[in-house]
Length: 160
Length: 155
Image (cartoon, rainbow over all chains, first blue to last red; front, side, top):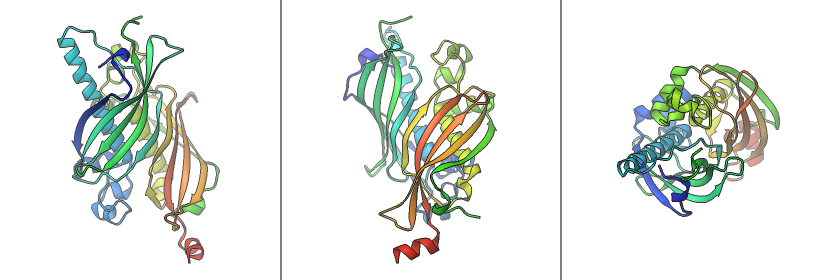
């Protein structure tokens, strides 16, 4: 994963795509969000979503999964080049999460992340605070998901 | 009885839980959706900013969703949610802890574009067994109005 110093405002990464099968949608919903339009095709068709729709928390969790996988891929590349590897810190939260369009069974969503702001933490000067816009687009090119995330990212020369 | 828009008015709505969170489910969710060392590896987690193993924030969100479903969404004429205005992870959720969820109604208004529905903005605060705030979430939910009320005004 990159260090704070490697980041620039406007940098954008495509972090991968994921196909939401009916089985995966129902499995997540059964555990965390068993509203009928997330569990049953017919109930989904009759809902505002117009089909079996993934829980929004499933969409957000899959975006996280792909962001972590992409970060770990970058970390392995850095390690292979003999460079130090950044271990990301936690996130204090997010804003403006929008489930713009439903994610329906069979949809393939491609996720991307674009850096919007960068600052050094005042309380923890060995850390940078990054704001990034995460977004998801379906196979028809329609935006389905967006959020503004915040995370702690380590600074390169501030090992403590 | 199904809850409609008219059943949500600003102020305290309810407290839900407690919901016990096991170590096994913390590790299982993290392995699937958020395999960072601070969520999976005791030793790495102890060296992280969180100072010990903690659940993925997305796991906590998903548990809060389930607690709201069990508490009231499951018997509400809910049409889904357009998003989350703001969400703050305030303290780590540790394996073995018990979550309690306080829900307030921040705002309830009739939808302009779909006058048979209303938009109920929920503020949920999850706490651990010690009472420490773990997460605050502010999120609108679209809820059907009672047919008699909605038709009276829309007609």
